[in-house]
Length: 584
Ligand code: ADP
Ligand code: MG
Image (cartoon, rainbow, N blue to C red):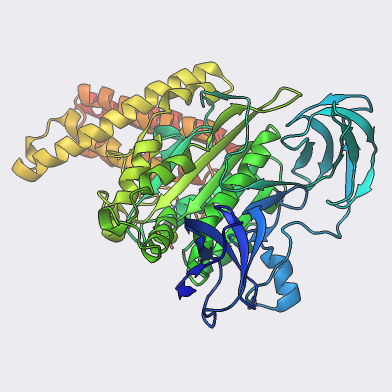
């Protein structure tokens, strides 16, 4: 009846249901029913609607928007509705034609299936019945889909495609269910789980400002808001590369296409610091960049999180990055406007915060459904790009209500080339107390916690002292205050500043973070002792070893002894200064 941008209205749809997927017009465009008025359905179409007009047929597929879950997900690059872009490019070239339909999982590829239960086993939803070695990094667990319960009648090892029967399960009433390597799940419904657990294990990112001051946990939620060019995408990429998760799902949502290209060219080259395997072997990419249709952008975050939940259900730690959730919210706004809904703040629909909350609530550490007993975690990290970096933006505000970690990117820091531009004074994490437990050596963990507090104290002191300097000049500062300013500068420049593009600096293990921070603070303590002994702060600030402290970040993990040696050098040089004062 009507076409308005990505929204199409069709009549005579009384048999269809809300959220059914439909095919629109002679080009078979893919859409989803998002509203009903009588027998009139409003359909959000995932492709360009130009050329579609009234009178064309709309076909109900009688199924909700779902994703295919099974071997073949890892290393895939999908669009927002799980069309495999890497396979489509081989078929159609670089420009996808409208109405292209290709299943998310290859129908030809055969996988080696190894059963883990035997004939006669009683199984139910979520139970693991076998495994497929999907990549060198991922052992794919095959689970009984929801709604199926019964006894295994047959199951056998061998090579199967995702559609072939690997096992038959007979339910109590005698119905036979054929189990395959693949199952489907509607993206808008969270996958079932047994029980939620508190997310208390730190997800180590190798990014010093994050791990030390504002950590995220396995199952935790975080958001990265900031103005344009402050490093949101770089933070997301760094996390996708280095977090100690088993699986990474990266959703490029509405941002520039070349950022996705960076991911595609870099990931296969980069090696996982723990396993030495290419990072791509644990990643799933979803690309719905700015030049792709708006409605599919709305779907892309759901596609991403459903795939992420599926791997969580296997008992894995999964991290999902979405860049940027603002573009997702804008897609929601666009659809809402076309549906002529009542706009709320900034034109966003009134259900904006509910949708954002529901999305982040799909994160968490959980006891998975089914046996054997296992625990999984899904962390969600969303970038938010408010216009002009304005934190009162409705998307930022709605996000801050639900997430537990806030990495506030500051334009001023990015301008000074202090990266990551995470503002240490306004950012926060509700998970800080868990860093201690992330250290293998408990004593180091306890010490790290104390050092973190001391370092943050110094940074806070610095911001107050700066205010004093601005008002009455540096002369007003005591020698101890001056030293605090020097140490704070060292914390900022030598410790917090981290170059994502430097081979060594890009990732710092927790143990190296400990050694580095200890060294910076050792300078402070030795400096304080020297001040007490009458040494001028200017002389302390000039000691040669400060160059070594500044370069500690470039010392490879394997040569960590060299960082410890810097502390001995600090002692030596301070003693010399004190000796010189004593001699006078
Ligand atoms: P945003 O996504 O917020 O618009 P980007 O993530 O694209 O910003 O970052 C903009 C630029 O800032 C990058 O191209 C890079 O030059 C620089 N940058 C950001 N973070 C870092 C970092 N950790 N190390 C080095 N350079 C960085
Ligand atoms: Mg960006």
